[in-house]
Image (cartoon, rainbow, N blue to C red):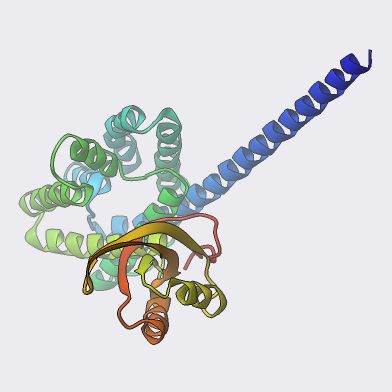
Length: 312
């Protein structure tokens, strides 16, 4: 009887633990969903402002699927919001196949919401100055794209096409996007004017730099690997002076300046921002001038003893 009661209590405790874990996971999923929606909505509002406040009233162009829609709108006067949805439908379907249905749904929602904003939100026209239109139109459009990407969606379907093509060829995603935009700008120069194509390039550059800034931020993360015979002191320096977390790998030293000699050693790995690289290198130099240090860019990260990336 006592044994059965113990088993019952243990099973009840395990069930309670599982229910708590499931509830916690659901809570995290709901929180992430609403965070993504906030990013997407603000991204759409920003992109809509760039289009209605700057580009559309001045008949300016951009790259990607938005640029294709703008070219068709300028040459045929076909409704731009409808074009925006129709042109991106194939890319949404591609996204469903190469990413997942969740991504496709969020992208479809973002693009549809952008079309609705462009059609119905009364954005004011800001300026007619061509340079300001190109720079700030690109800035707000790029902000919208960057915020949407942070929300797990895209509002320019050519990025999805670029991912698909890069997986089947030796080209990178950046190479494919560049080729697509060269074709878009060439089409704009042929159908409209060379001047329009040149301003479209300027708009695209402003947008792409803003996207990088929104996604990466000014404090780009750098992963630093340090191999030194004084790894203990370097480890303490990073923790106490730099205020950063570390990971220590167990390694084995091979051929070096002292000849081929195998012995165990510690390899220190940490992540800092680009602004902290100079200080870290100086402190390592003080401890061990012969330390072997190499760095690589970290595109994204989560957790650990490093501050969260802010929105700039």
